[in-house]
Image (cartoon, rainbow, N blue to C red; front, side):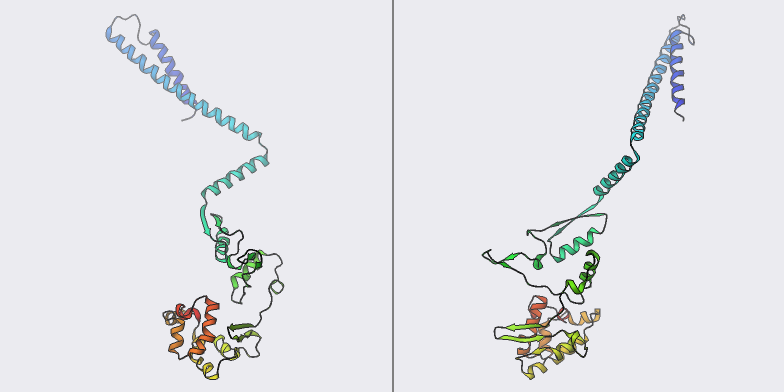
Amino acid sequence: MSKAKPFVLALLLVVCTHQFVQGWIIPTTTTSTASWKISKAATSAAAAAAADVIALRSQWSSALYNQQQHSELSSNRTPTESKENDVERQRHQQETTKRRVVVIGAGWGGLSAAHTLAKDDSVKVTVIEASPRVGGLVRDGFTTLSGQRPAEAGQHGFWFNYHNIFRLMEQEIDDFDKEKALTAYAKQGQYSPRGLEAVWPVYQEQPVQLPTGLAQAVFTQFLNLPLADKLSAFPLVLAFSEFDDSELSWRKYDAVSFRDLCIRLGVSRRCYQEAFEPMILTGLFAPGAECSAAAAL
């Protein structure tokens, strides 16, 4: 129904009411009680209907007025203001509909998780860190227990299989040059209370490239380990070479600890204690008895 029709109906009903009152339709000169009742009922019904339609017209007029006012205000805004308001309204709507994620801890794991989540426009990320500086165990700014002397947590090695770290640096750091940003690989020494026990070379710099397990057995220099103890590690070297990170390999080696695997393969006690146990402690931060053989391999 068009907007004009309700208004026309309202006028007709008002006219009809007036006609009833004046006696045009039902003469007021009649003395019939029935006629008076009909006239009174018709007049009341017509008046009520007219009032309803007039009220409806008033509501429509108010709505039309508000719409007109909004249009006038919109027309007074410059194109730049309209665009800015639309962008701000859209941004506010997006912010209120985002999923909120809280990451506890701003170490490498926490920062990596937050960085990945922040790439999703539908997620709002908050990182909570108790320390005054981020970085976890690899941050700087440590001091001794007295608080007087600065101390470092130690350097962190970036191995060639740290693909995600290198990719992050290349994507987030302008003109990133890995050769300039990171030092070259160097030999590593393994010490005990008796002094230097072993030297771990950079295997890729060796004249002959061998599989990891075999290269460790051939090129690692165990300075104080007798030959018989070195030879006892040969079965473990084969296990190193056999493990290919497949699901089958994990099923085979994940159910046994690294220490138990060494015992089964006949690795001597001295070889385990002086060579492999320190390696597991520094690499996996736990004793060999608590580490999966699959993780160690």
